[in-house]
Length: 287
Image (cartoon, rainbow, N blue to C red; front, side, top):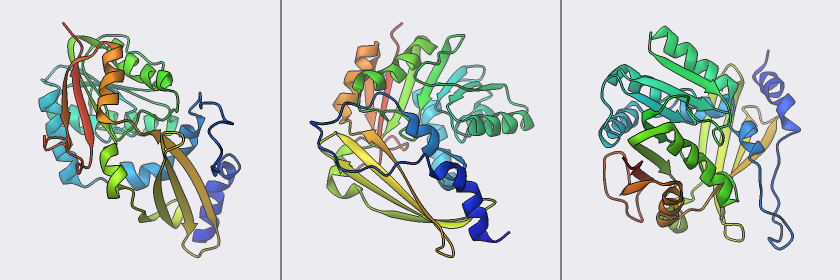
């Protein structure tokens, strides 16, 4: 099968459900109260492009950071909220001999994570469920939410629900880490277009990623355009994330009961500045 045909076959069943957002007056629209776009945005190709391709040195730095700030020791139970394919939690379990409980809305991601975990003989449980509602059956010693996997709703009350579930999943004294967009940097020169090339079972194509702050809604709109290598097929998909300043993230987490806040700009434990590539919030569930 030609590359263009594979591209069309893979995306054809999804194309009708993707939405290209148009500018609308905020006075005429209600706040978004669902995140159904996430189910379509975070698919197998997103995994191939962004979840499976992180440089090893970045992963090693992230693992070391989480082990330290979450105080993870062998035998701990760690909750990976929005776990994806287990890009972080599986090597974390291997390094620290801890038990992982992961949740993600994508059945394909969960299946891949569970399969790899079993191959490595790790003690883990990956569950396909809504992270806004999922609470672990037993209290965890630590938890994290990585790759800006929260804040995908225009309603702050909905976004807070994910943090509430993390809080409820922790034992008293457990630590939580949230990796989010560094909005001050985005307001500068952080919103640059990115182009990636993919070769895989779904075909060969180019993905053009463009992020744009929408000040009327307080959201960062992300538009990804997928073009087959021969140019015959072109599909656009969109998503959005809330433009939370660091103090606003702390505010949401405080409302859930978290305390002892610390801010970092990267997994190297660099302090948060307006130029940092990340905004990482570390906090604790009180004893």
